[in-house]
Image (tube, rainbow, N blue to C red; front, side, top):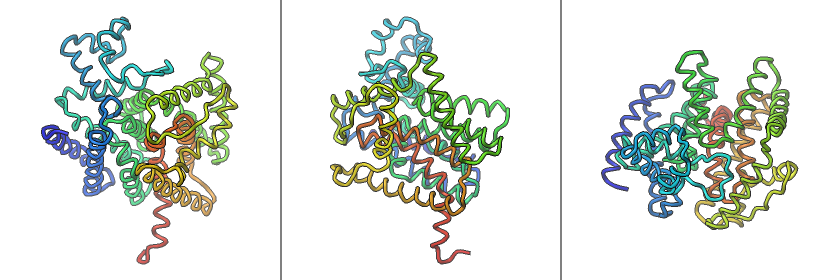
Length: 425
């Protein structure tokens, strides 16, 4: 952390806060300012963690993508045409570019890669573009990424929740939830994921129309999701199609779930007939992750069985995967402060989900939008728990999905707050 970088970061904080206040919607200026300030403080806290605690820049995601972005940015000054070809992925001399540029980077070429696509490239490219205005200071990159994350959560809160008071609570929960404040700040993939999700729900639930701005926002959302973590886009599409169909046909939530399940089954079948076996790809990704963990030996790793060939192996592993995401680490597995924090988060999640379930049962219904979100994040939870044998990584990877749970549960949490408040109307 450098004084010049912090100073430039503060300048960008003021510029981006001004943009947020110009589009604050139903939120008060004080609320937006307080929460965005907390988000920026989370950005600097994350930078401190990766500077002084996890000090190896080659394994710290905020730095390895940033450092590679700076390297890629220098290509523009030496060979601007090569830079543009890399940015737009139009280069054909792959071996030449590999030896000239990509082997100089730390994260462009993945070890144990499944060879389907590389989601590091998008983050490196974004950092290389930001380098034109950051003058090489990470603090600017971190604040810009956090601004995008904040905007995504704001879009989700005002699009998925109806009442203004509930929207304020939803945004507060989304921003201040521990893993959100830390792992969805700074230059991590999760910041772009929640921005993409927010852009998608804003288009489809807030102001859908055929204006160019709407089309651009929708296209940007899908580009971000498919470029950062393609399984987020893959999980989003069937859930939203089922929601749209149920909304048009006025179907019950039970039938909406049935439509979603049929779409998922059909998706597996169609992709298999097209020559791409989703089950085999999931198994290969899990093996890649387990092999990588055996090499780097992170402190919060835990034992996980290798998946066997075939879809049945995946189906059998689903209950354990959900337990890994929502219940673990168990008390006897705790060995670090981060794992203690994860247990506290799990308790919060359990209380929130309990409030959600109890209120839904009392109302004898669940809205189609809420079911859409749950069907969207269910595959995220399953894949995260099935592929990730590291508690710290699970805490980070699940963060965007947990934020969505907090947002759609805000009305139910507000209801219980009102019930226990002695001076309510």
